[in-house]
Image 1 (tube, rainbow, N blue to C red):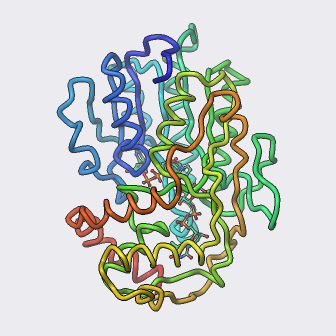
Image 2 (tube, rainbow, N blue to C red; image 1 turned 90 degrees about the vertical axis):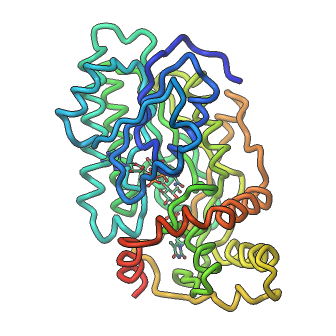
Length: 355
Ligand code: NAD
Ligand code: DAU
């Protein structure tokens, strides 16, 4: 377990009811009983308190329902709880939704981050000692790679979607507050996560859900797009490490050393699903359907995670095959969770997105 930088008793984690946030909240609540973890989440369609049922009664945990874009509310909770660190994950996170409603992404991801930065600054600007603003970001800020090359921490920002542009903008504001007001921060830019509790709008859980229900698997374009996949628990471990040992004003890239073309990944997923569901070999692959491409679709993401590996000793603990098998098992064993999140508004989204 990482050594503690100092006793940061009051930690605000934003977006803790979402996919990655829930794994981070669980890790911090369980591993650091001396910290008090405040989970602030607006409970949008992507936020779900069922993700945290196992820790909701813990003494060092408090859930706060609220919106990071509500400045008055944010200032009130800072005055009440004096958070000395923030791990900021709350965001609108799905690229396809950003194409349909870019303003919502600007509001939450840019304005929401700025409101948190302002509140943090107002609280601590006279003495930054022991304080930290940890901004969780994405590799998508770097834009797209061609067939070769890797994103390093010095790759220029070149975002292509409204989602990645809003995340890039929020990263710039965090750095600007660091330079202008001396606000202590770290930023991590991570590749595609997968694992339990991911909302079934993202590739892997969407396709697991569709295979279970014998629905078509809508592969965008020719499926020749590449992503670098990381098991969500390994991301949570990296966040823990950077939180405790990362150097002030530094950025760390986090990735799985695990590139897959979408079509190859989907075929592997189909094979594993056929085995687990006891279906005839090859039956899930028949559900693959090539559909209209995502506008501005980035060809390839791949992270060079050498810096976090060499400087902080982090590397992924789980192979992709293991992680994917665990993920499928989780969805198969949590049918109620899946049914709950795919009822109601989900159906409307699905029809609009895949019409
Ligand atoms: P998610 O969509 O599953 O969860 C986002 C959470 O934020 C939800 O619980 C939602 O209710 C909450 N939220 C949204 N708007 C809010 C607001 N205005 N106020 C308060 N809470 C709000 O997202 P995720 O996939 O867990 O991503 C978490 C963070 O990690 C994001 O910042 C994302 O950009 C980043 N990230 C994600 C990935 C990935 O592969 N999923 C990879 C790299 C970085
Ligand atoms: O790289 C990190 C990013 O990864 C995060 O910052 C984002 O929050 C997260 O959503 C993810 O973005 P992607 O756009 O890469 O993930 P998504 O699961 O939406 O898509 C993965 C790939 O699969 C991408 O090339 C598009 C393709 N795809 C996706 C869906 C939903 C399909 O072919 N069909 C689909 O139906």
